[in-house]
Image 1: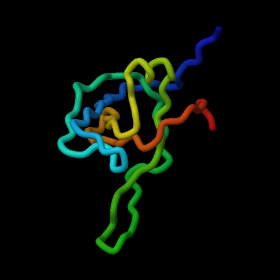
Image 2: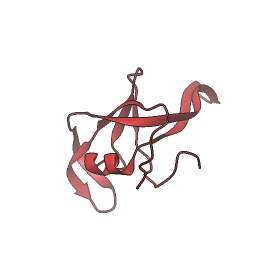
Image 3: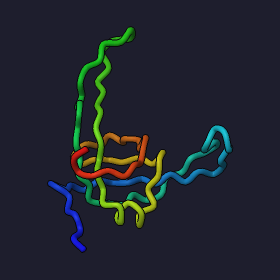
Length: 106
């Protein structure tokens, strides 16, 4: 079986969320703790990066994109929606909004 490779992988820090209380309707409530970060290789693709979006309160820099991980790596790390990622060299934390199976090009 041929195992796919990531194109230009870079280190991604994954901060796993540990919820102290979980409400069935609202999700995690109360204090949220973060586990020690795990470094995993990922393929980063930005659709928008620091694009200024005019709002009523002024310009708001925002970005949009996705990160591709090998399914085996993601499963072993136990990543899930709500966890946070830090993409080097930036120190900004990004929230995982959706996890879905996909290929490099979709």
